[in-house]
Length: 164
Image (cartoon, rainbow, N blue to C red; front, top):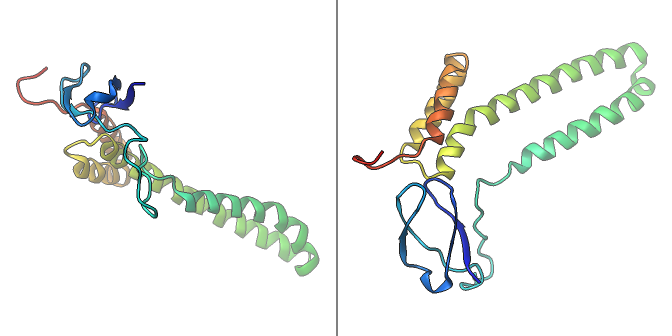
């Protein structure tokens, strides 16, 4: 059974024989020297050690927030008119809806602003920190133009000098 893994530089899918685990090889796609990882079941993790994931962890707090807002959006119109009266309940629901919309917009700005940096870190780009900063400043100060530059920059394969 062969070892399946991705190139840490260009993310090309690769396979290697298990006896090559731990040995260096050259990626056929980008030409970068890489090391063949150990098979997944070859090195058991000690108890309590978190397993490594292939990408950044999912923002669980964002999922919980969206579920809470959805539940509140369904239950609030049913309970508030009886508690506060129809007019006050409508006013409260309007302000609550505006607050939820503002929260979702802020969440979207956060997720978009951090996206180029996360992509660059996942691809192990050497200028990942600069890409992260360019993404945030480009989104907030240049109306999105710098963010587009950061996204393109995060997806470029950084080659050694003398290579195409």
